[in-house]
Image 1 (cartoon, rainbow, N blue to C red):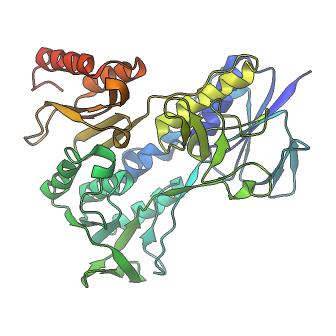
Image 2: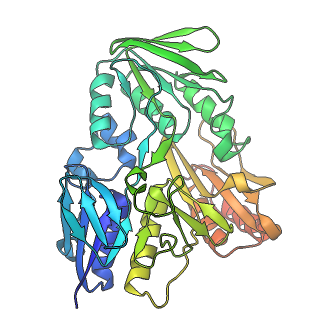
Length: 410
């Protein structure tokens, strides 16, 4: 008898799950429910290519029109508001009840809202409409203040700078990227901003934002006031799990899942992407990851475990995230925050350094790596991490790669 898979969420985790189910032999109907009334789209370009205007919205599509897409049904523009795990139904905001045999929760995350009460001109960036509205204000010109020096804030700052805006980045941490990249690489990103004329106010918090778009004032905790035409707030994200509070599922900063990405205590509900908090076999604890690569790889794992329920595979990824800022490519494999020692391969000096920082993991193995403008090294590091390679072996291979590739090559 034909089954129905309902995927709740139409961003990359949801669409890739649906496509993988269709391509992987799922014997039934695949329905994707999404709250945005627009064709499913990719989000990384929203802070870069789409925000600059280099890419039109059509280039962001997650649908390629192939056979897998043809088997996927879309129900867009209506949010899911309740999951009934007993009767196996998803209730939508318009009152429709959608029955399922298997359900995948892929509702992602939302930008943490601004806690400051300015009436307009203050933006967050998570959706296509967010990016379009921000672009309109950036094209107006004037001073731009970016609150938050993480990846999204840094990318928006670089894009606004390219569009000709005068930009200031504010963050309460003295070195906001060090928490992700470590103290060796983190400070370099501050210097990238400064070299491009972007001001930084790190180690300083925001206490208030007042005014309206075109005439805003950002009040800092050191007493300074920054004038701004536009403010962008990039202070993290929160998982879209509120609609599950009445479901009986275990929800705590995401949907709690086992190592197979099944919602805890169920056999027919899975989660993928930013909303999933799964038991990571490598770490022995539940983790939630907000990266594009994780969403894609977790979607593939979930689809595979649905199609082959008798022989599920645990999801144990090698984490990967990248950031394009100005003309730099920053790539991270693994989680540097979980490591101890490190070794630098290459040179961190110069206008556009090419280097890798390898981090020591448990048991003398390679634990993580950060590469700057060196994609070949990143590929090697991801392979070595997946193989749980010895740290000294990894260093030797990276040294060989550095010697084989002249510094001038990219």
